[in-house]
Image (cartoon, rainbow, N blue to C red):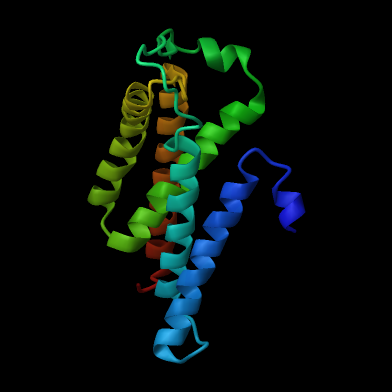
Length: 177
């Protein structure tokens, strides 16, 4: 399985995220001396996995440049230019990467208002953080792209939409929390 995961660009990081999540579950099992894993423990394990994988894809610099002169930071400010000229994997990747964030946040806090604020702030923070990483590392690790922001925002809102649909279905069936 590890050889299969290493074929992908983020395969090694995916394995690290899985390992950290499994270590959390093992720690919890050791701490409480029970193999019974509650929903809360699984939720925290999934959240750790998501956070590590998310940070590794969007925030870890790919390299550091030793030059005192910072090269120009790639910046794409024209909306829909990248979306119209890129393949479906890039588009789906940006949407699907942020989709679970809103759902996991709602499952942790239980508040739709807080989840909405999170769903708006998460995609708005990625591109400025990437710009900061580019500036601090003196190397253009990331392209600061308005289309990425649009797609990430769409993914975050889709996750929030799934939360709202789930709440309406649960309310219609009178299922308690």
